[in-house]
Length: 183
Image (cartoon, rainbow, N blue to C red; front, side):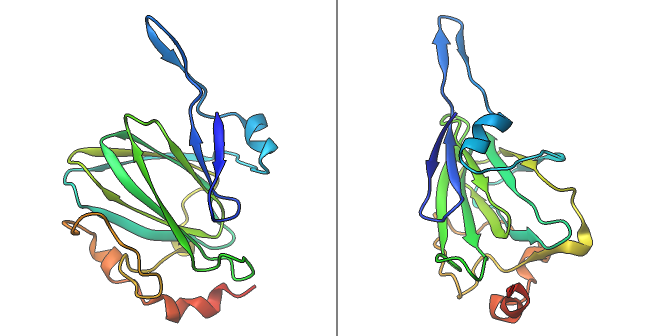
């Protein structure tokens, strides 16, 4: 695995180091020891798949608070997504900043989402599948979020939003939840 640091501290884009021959290729997608070299402690407690019928679909922004704070490895296994993470750590030099990364079934990239980051994505193709490896069990009581178009972040989605859940459009503005994030 090849990890590339992003402008947001502790977040990485992970690319496969393929070993190819005439059959195809083999590559490691997860290794606790390799991740530790970059300061990543990732015990996987849950894996999830998100399937999306229509391009332009947005999921997010989601995160979990204590005691169920999550770290994620996110990979697009079919189609393509524009994956966005937002740093919600008040003491971070990049607090409230975000990055977007294109993850596709063809580029095999993954995005490591550190704890205390919000996560959301938009599908760039129809019939898109996203695979998550998560460090904590989902806990509905610890789930939080903010709207995909929250003005506090000015996130530019590549496509018009075609589908989004009722829950994701009903999150309160970030300014209402920001005080709860203070350490």
